[in-house]
Length: 142
Image (cartoon, rainbow, N blue to C red):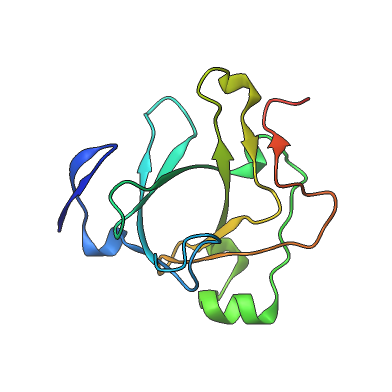
């Protein structure tokens, strides 16, 4: 399918690239379908582009790249919703906020990561109740 986005222009999305959220992302109650795009070949950043709102795209990043000890414990319900058969099929991402005038001050939301089942492209935003995982964690340190 072809979709027009405000950030990337017209893009082709194969059906097997569509990521379906089990529940909408916090603050976006009607959006369930996304596609992941690389920011560029030389950075680890990716974009999570909404297929239902052409103007909505999130910068996401694997938290292991900046917080190696970060861990997400999924509930039995989360595992069932994601249809996870193995931990190896789960990929965790955090939504990143990049200040336009100072990218070095970017922060990642460690409290509500995205978990993607890489086998079936089902994803879920998981809210963690852990005080060690803030909503605005400095990606490049304090």
